[in-house]
Amino acid sequence: MVKAVKPRGYSGSGGKLSTIPLKIGCLMLSERDKKHWGWNIANRVGSSRGTVLNVFRNFERRGWVERQHEKINANVEYRPPRVLYGLTDLGIVAIRDALVPFQHAPVST
Image 1 (cartoon, one colour):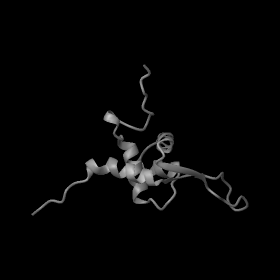
Image 2 (cartoon, rainbow, N blue to C red; image 1 turned 90 degrees about the horizontal axis):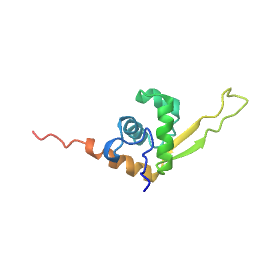
Image 3 (cartoon, rainbow, N blue to C red; image 1 turned 180 degrees about the vertical axis):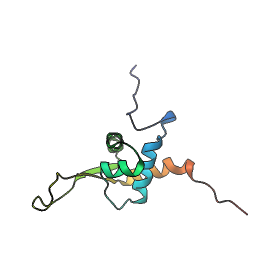
Image 4 (cartoon, rainbow, N blue to C red; image 1 turned 90 degrees about the vertical axis):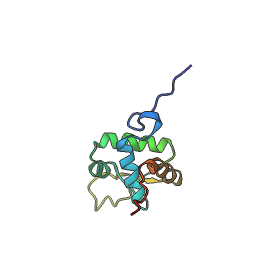
């Protein structure tokens, strides 16, 4: 019998998202109309670019994000195109579900 191995940087105990993927998912959910790239997200969530890229790869395997290469004008831009990630409909639902335990009920007075 082969034991399933969880991808690194993806989930914590009990198959739940760990802190960095939750931060990334929450950020992407709050800005779901935007495309995101690794370096920018890493700076915003306080993580390394490598960790963020691992999370993006794992989200992509799950069908939570779509990847595309940035379109730039080579005559104007002097850098390679960035890889951009955007949430899919499945990703929006999955991240919302993962965040449910962290939502608080309003405090009654």
